[in-house]
Image 1: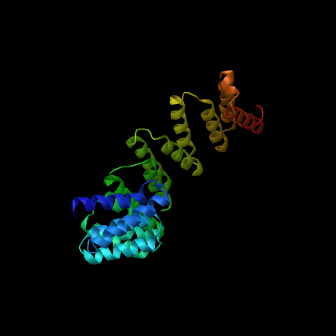
Image 2 (image 1 turned 45 degrees about the horizontal axis):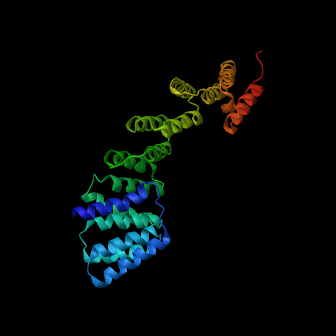
Image 3 (image 1 turned 120 degrees about the vertical axis):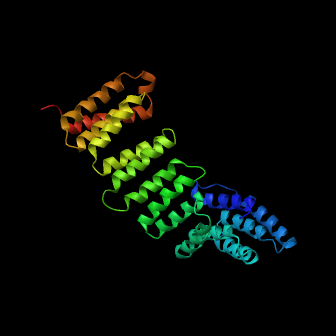
Length: 280
């Protein structure tokens, strides 16, 4: 595949892999009109149809995007980039069985293409094939040109749906992402959420204690520690954590105590102390 077309295919597929991009519809209309004028001048240039298809895809005119890609492929039937692009549009149209075949064709020629591997995993997830999706995300993360916390969260969510014992594996994925992305905070929070929802109390407490050692402000994390201890049935330790949270809050400067967020935190700590009751 030519270098420029490969880069174009990567950018297209990345539109489905990365966060959504916001574009003005008026600007897209102008670009689509300009692309159409170029096609009128060069009606047998497959790249022009692919590029207009990308604009239609951004404008969410998926049927028109698909029509342009079909025309591009008819002019250059051996260009595997067009197969990947078609897969992305078919996926957007929820025609995932067809998309599955198109992306498999592409990966047959480019098995280490990170964005295409990710798209393949997304298609498997849309079809409810969670084991295949989890394996696909694992392969994609190795080869993606740019990884974000969302990639690890999506991979972990797929693993969670694969069955028994999946929670610990999902947490391992999130922790690996946290290390790879230099301490991505959102992955720490997501791992803690899984530990709590799967009643992995000891692991959740170890995580909160690690966060507390680093946190400049500890009161909200002491409250979280108390909630975990309370959920685990360790009432006396939970009370101590809530009391420590209250004590940490009282040490804050007055200007901080007057902030709405601090007042809300104070109310949550007081409610927790009332709920758990005094020492017996």
